[in-house]
Amino acid sequence: MVPSSVGVLNKISAILAVLEKGPACLPTVVSETGLKRPTVHRLVLAMQNLGLVDDQQGQFIVGPRLTHLAMVAQHAMADRELRRELSALRATTGARSVRLHQRYGDQRICVAEALRYKSAPSDRNPVRAVAMGTDPVSRVFFAWQRLSRSHVTGSDAAVCSGIRHRGWAQGVTDEGLVLAVAVCGRDGELAAVLSLSSPSRRTRCSFRREVIKNAVEAAARISCRLPAQESTGPVKELEDFPRRVGPRSE
Image 1 (spheres, rainbow, N blue to C red):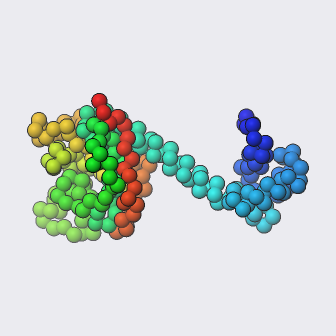
Image 2: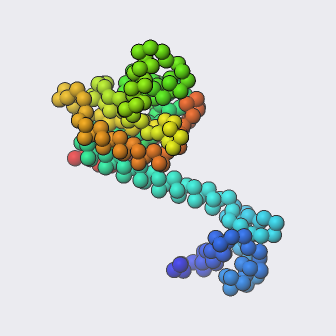
Image 3: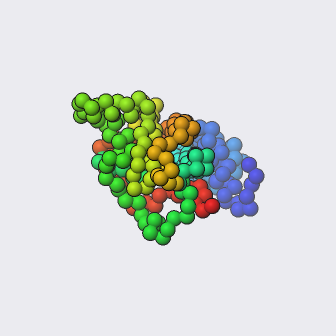
């Protein structure tokens, strides 16, 4: 690594580079860093106080704070890929909006979106929970929940089974024509629902096959990055702003 202009950071970085290889005692850290023993001892104690280093029976290891930061970095990279995925799908399909929804209890929230047009000031309010209804997104959520819990019979069961077999549903809402595609985890359980809304519901009553194909393929890629959500989980973090991604004005 190229050293910085701040000496103390270079010393801390050298210590972490040793611990990166695995647990190490104080003499080992001193030997491999080339730093004086009092310096290493002083820095390691300070790093322990900050959670950057932990002491495991006389062996120093990477601390819990660094483990947490690694998880945050991994999440940030996955989030960046998700942003790119939604923006690319919106650009490819010409959709007015592309959104990703996750379920919390009997409600759902939009956790990420790519919009074609710049949002109005009223659209920049904190995200609120949306109750399940009869729209395509809700129907996809219901199809997995009801069949999994055997809450359907007769024609309702046939509808839910059809949605699960196809992996998507579409219909007209106040937003226009909406396509909702299931995003399933490796266990086959529903992790999220990807939705596209058309620029105008007056021009067509269903999405083209090519659009559906692109959305299904995007959902498959997204599924690798999203864990399954518990259907009875609490509604959390509803005051967060949606992650608006991609170009919003053209």
